[in-house]
Length: 105
Image (cartoon, rainbow, N blue to C red; front, side, top):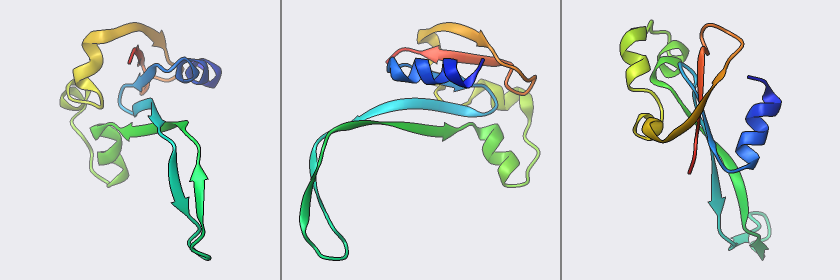
């Protein structure tokens, strides 16, 4: 899986799950009124789509210095409730990211 494939999938509005790493998803934000913190002047903020990331329990444990149990971490990773709706599994370049799943919204 390349960055171009991940980007194209996110542009289509689908989620990308990289096992042992995390879940990338696109979220729509509505139009709202913001405020300039320096001047206090209100300014409109247009609606837009943003990319969100939720790290897997395995990645979170590694970042915090723990050695996670791989078998259990893969079974309860980010977006585990959405796995049943996965469209397809793409090949990832490394063994740690061996399975990437695209999840439809």
